Length: 329
Image 1 (cartoon, rainbow, N blue to C red):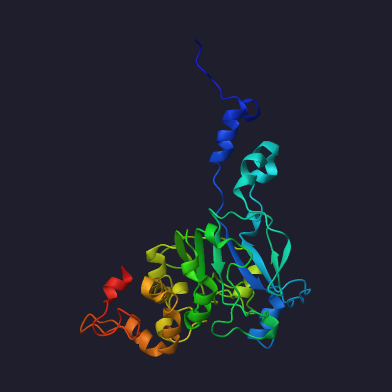
Image 2: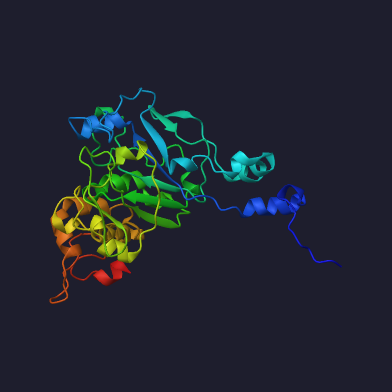
């Protein structure tokens, strides 16, 4: 029997082998999150529109929707195998939820920026807690926020992410409502990358890690829909040592909150409290109510003294309650 000297062309393979190969094609990692229209966001948070990097202003949006699910990276809006041929589409289409272009829910018009959503691999992101009656009527306060996954099936969501908003934890907590995500497997902290829309061009340099250090500032959430983004996993070393994730950060109150590592501790501590069965979804409100005591407890270095007690009044907190080690592990 003569040895095989070359592999046959893909189209000449038996159908069952081609189908197995299609099934093995990895799905891209995508971030999908709810955002208001760009101009509406800027009008609420800033008095003047932020100029584009090319000097032009942001164009006014058509009032076709209140909130829109934005997908990043944009090039992955439709997964490549869906473009190839009928056979590939037949294998891949059952993996996706296909939402309508627009849907009316609770007097809000929700637009889906992608025709295909994967509950298994997409990372559903809460950028902020948005107001129930649309951002054009003001910024959300307290519990009056839109469901962060409105129009989606919460029972099928496996991966979520939250942007780092230390002062707005109550809004974010209510938007997530984490105890209503029974199949949640991964919780990710999303850090915004460098802003390319600054009117001042940031200086670029190389640091000891071989990464680009920017003298600019981090991207605002509204800008996620103004450009094409990339998704990167950050190592511990980068989070702890790269200037962009430490002292160079501008959009955070107080020097103790600049480092991304501080936000990780903050969000992990909130989650630990919020997911205790005896006080589901109660921690965020208490954290807001005792903000400075909470920050002092959570971020203070206590190597040289006694450990402080948790300032929250939930069961298991206080003088006879949990330790920081229990909370962080």
